[in-house]
Amino acid sequence: MNLLQVILEKAREQSSWKVTDVDIVSAVGLLSDLQLHPSSVHVVAAGSTPGGVPSNVVGAQYSYTTLITSKILNKEAHSLPSVPSYIGQPGNVSKATPSLDSSKSGHSHPLPPIKNFNAFMQQTDNEWDDALDDVNNSNLPEEEKEVTPDVPVFQKRVHTKTSRPGTPSALETNTPSEQPVQSPRPSESKRKNTNGLKDNIPDLVTDTKKADASNTSTLDPSNLLRSCIQDVDKVDAKYTRFKNILSCSNIDLAALRELSWSGIPADFRPMAWQILLGYLPCNSDRRVATLARKRKEYEDGMTAAYARGTAGLDQTLWHQIHIDIPRTNPGIPLYQSEATQMCLERILYLWSIRHPASGYVQGINDLVTPFFHVFLSMYIDDEAETYDVSLLPKEVLSVIEADSFWCLSKLLDGIQDNYTFAQPGIQRQIATLKELTCRIDAPLAMHLQNEGIEFIQFAFRWINCLLMREISLRNTVRMWDTYLAEGSEGFSEFHVYVCASFLATWSVQLKQMDFQDIMIFLQQVPTSNWKEKDIELLLSQAYMWKSLFHNAPNHLKK
Image (spheres, helix red, strand yellow):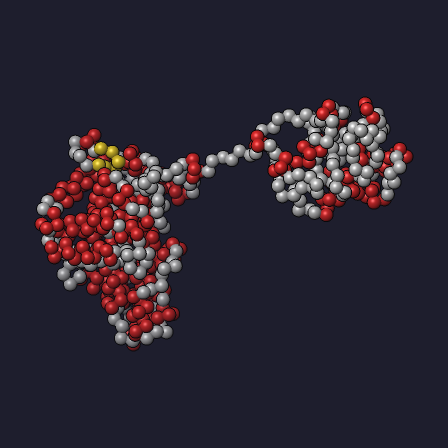
């Protein structure tokens, strides 16, 4: 600090400017803020440079001329404010000339200026304004202007927040060529197909003539897997494990079930569901031939059933299906589309005539919708619930329809006694649900009994439609991930524990209601705001109770 006092004394001797103690304190603070070493400041006598223009102090980040001499001897060259700029008064600040003692400065090129110390202390939220360089450089004569090397646009710093009084903003000083170049947005660089289809649809749907001389479209499993892996940025462990399992030539079904219990990523869900249901072979070498054969079989069945049009169909059966289809998911645009309803109608009619023991039963129309929803999402980028399937190529729609039919058949094969005469499967599950509720929530079971409520009055629909009318389609899809991972018992025995968990969720409210309120409540359970975490909590509780009671049925009896 002694050196600084010497500098100020020199300035006082050479000019009429009166250096005060405030000036010294401000200068000390400035040097401390800049973290400059005292040896980097050199006193240069006024008028020592050609033309009498005062020199700059080398080693600082901007000119200290006004600190050394307050009055410019040669006012014709350029004018500086009579008050030192570091005191905080508005004024122009010139940059250090790199040609003067640049070897002492330790910098190969001048650093950008900073704001004066007092102004910075008064408004500490201001950002440094690089625009001052261009403004103050423009006040110098042409021969003394500093030549700044061209800097790429992306290296320029542009601050538009604040600027000194009387100084143009950074945006005003920028020329059009200096404007930052904006990179294209991801959504612009990767545009969706105009019909909402994925870009690789031509690769996904291939001509099976290359495989078995048939004329039915199929999916190459390698292309199917690539369609599942759309987001290359996903690197989480679960996503990677699914990718590794489904990429194997022989899929480990046990490992896939274990991983799928906690939910399947949407990209892998179509392929995982088909494998877990046994529709898609685990061996990759058999997939092309199997898919071609099954889809050809469905096409032949549809051709035979509709050979004479709707007039040749079983009118009673067809009429019941025809009036139930519009009632299916009435709040979702996808299922109010005529093209979608025609697909579901054909699927249900063909399944019914192939299973005369049960035939069509109301509720089966709900069970086909998750399959159609999931398999449709494999081919489109848009949201499936609002997509218009009439935009799909005919070959793609036929593949979705055939896959949905066979997966529905696989599902119903495990719970077909729910739909045969007298529906013994549902009766048995309702009895188990009652016993389970008496064991896990005896006060609720007693309250329902006192109000004269039978379990069949509300639980029949829960088991017949697999809770699909109580839970949204999106949450149903997540629940079915776990059901499929449970194996053949997922949609039957495990579902009973899910129903028990679902009933116990509303235990507090139900115990405060009478008969009428209970029935109205259970017909319209408030699950519209449920998220995936609510479904996972429901499933976890069901799994806990299954672990306690399933292999020890005597524990259900008092």
